[in-house]
Structure formats: C-alpha cells, structure tokens
Amino acid sequence: MAPQQPLVNLSPAELSFLRSTLAQSPPIRLDVTKGPRDFRSMRAEYDVLPAANGSARIALEDGTEALVGVKAEVERSRPRPTLGEQEEVATAAGGAADESRGKGQNSWVEMSVEVPGFREDDALPVFLASMLTESLLASGELKDRLYINTRFHWKLYVDILLLSPPLSYPLALLSMTTHLALLTTHLPALKSEKDEDPLFDDDWAAAVPLYPNRADANKTAPQLGKPPVIILAMAVGSNIIFDPAKEELAVADAVLAVACTNSTSSSTGARIVSIRTIDPPSHLTPPGVPNSINSATGGTVPTSSADALTQRELLANSGVWTPPRGGMKRGLVSQITKMVVESGGVAEEVIGALAAIEVG
Image (tube, rainbow, N blue to C red; front, side, top):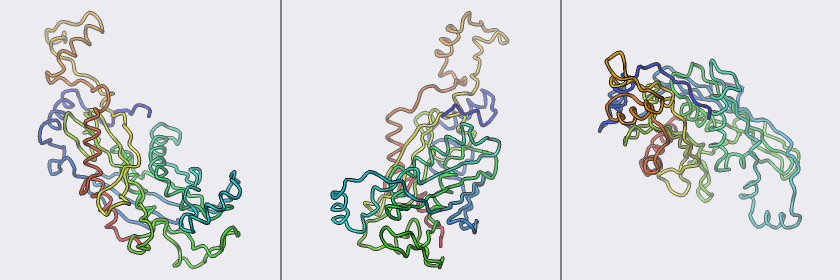
C-alpha cells in the first residue's frame, strides 16, 4: 500500500505523551471508558436500498458512516477446458451437493469503493477494495455460491460508499458493513434444471439467501461459513489495542488487519482467511528535537545527518518522540491471532454482535 498521510496533526510532544499512555500497563486510551479489546459503539440497519439484492448501513459513534449495496446479474460463463468423461464421473460420484464446489471464479465478484475527497484510482480506495475483495474470495465459498450451471453464473457487484470523510481508518467499518449487506443478500429461486437457460421464480418471497441462516439450513449438510470480517489491531510497545482511533494510529508501532469468519468445524471460535500488515501513519510523523541537539536551548547542532541519527538513537528512551521503524514482531503477530480466533475471542464477539441483528 502507498504510505498513508498522517490522519491527525499532533506535535511531537503530544505524540510522545499519547504513546506513553498507550504503552503503559494497563493502557489508557483516549476514551478512558474503553479497554484494549473494546470497540466503538455503532448503529446498524439493513435493506436500506430497495432496488438492491442486499444492502446495509453502519454509523460509528465518531460520525463515520458507510453504505453498501449488493446487486446480482446473470452472466454467460466462458467455456472452460474439460477432462471429458473423467469430469462426468467425478460429478456423478460427488452428488448434487458438490456440484458447484471449485467451479467459481474470482472475476464473478466485482467491488468498488468510493471515499469522499479521493478519486477512484487513488491509493486509499484501491487498497481498501483490494483488501476487501481478497478476504471475500480467500475461502472460495462465495464464488462457488454464484455458480448456476456450466453455461451461466451470477455476477455480484458490491458497491461501497463512505458517506462521511474518513475520520479514522475505514477498513474495519467497510468490512462490517459489507458483512451485513451480504448476510441480507437474496437471489431469485432457480426453477430450471441442469444446463437449461436459467428460469427464476418471480416471487421474491421465495428468494434464496446468499448465506443461508444456520437455523434454516439442513443439519446434515456441511456447515456454511459467514462473510468475513476484517479486524484492525495495533501494537504499542507490548500492548495490543483493537479498533484504534485515528489519534491512536498516529503513535502505532505496527498495524495488523486480520480477516476472519466463523469456524465451520466447531460452534465456537473463528478461523482466519487472510492477514495483512498496514503501514501506519506514525511512520510519517515528524520527530522531536532533543534539547541536546537543539541550538535554541543551548544544545550542539550535529555536524552531519549521520551524527544526528546517531544521537537520536542514543536518546530513543528519553521521552522524545521518534517515529517507529520496522514492522511487527512475530511474537506480537502470534499473540494477536490467538486473541482473535480463540473461543470467546475478539472475532467471535464481533461476528456474534453482527449476527444479533435480526435480518430478514
């Protein structure tokens, strides 16, 4: 991803103070009522776009708001090379339940992200769309559900709109809104059989959900996963903080985006479908100037840039703000993933909270 411009304008002294409060044990966040694993409160609603197959809208307490619409169209599939009789035997042995497994294509899902103040080809919207698309297609379940027959398939258009300027890094918000929109997406019921031209039921009440409800699904059939949700976590020293605010991201040592969904092998816990690091805006913040090398306070100005860098390294623990360098240590990555996917972990709480919203 292209380097992010700083989201906030804080002085080196303010950055140093903020980092010291987040690095202590236990950390003190800007909102003192929240702990390291607490998320901002939100207001969610679904089916807000009547002409779409599925839609959702989520607004955070800081005013950031996102709207997602999902539209499905029937397209003719491109001919794919076959293996003759071997494919027919495999299909007959697998049964109707496995008819669409492994036949979906990534091109059947198209996603666009619009952010106020950014062009469509700017680095931020392109990266957000890439991250969200990667998480949706990682498991392969979504694209396989778009398979109709060997001649036709569903083409899914996911349009994501950030209604307000990005007051904080919007990746997690857009992911949760997309999750809720896909849960409410319905496709017309198919009446035709096998490789016939698709014929659908006109009754929208008979429409089939893209992600069937677990209570409505057949208990003997394999459990289906839900749309993935991206959880944002940052590290400050040895502390891990989830759902960071824009000011907290300005002092982050490293930021991790973990895409996870419910575990299909057990009723508790979650599983990771993708994981990526994000370049935090703290790397672009201006460093503080120690008094020892500040001529305005009686210090000695370094004779060269190498000398200045050496003196800054020696004063790294003096409380003067220095932008973090490098990435996240392996131990922290392991700790974050464990906190996310364990039974009763962060992923289970987020997915459970979104599932608590009664969707039709």
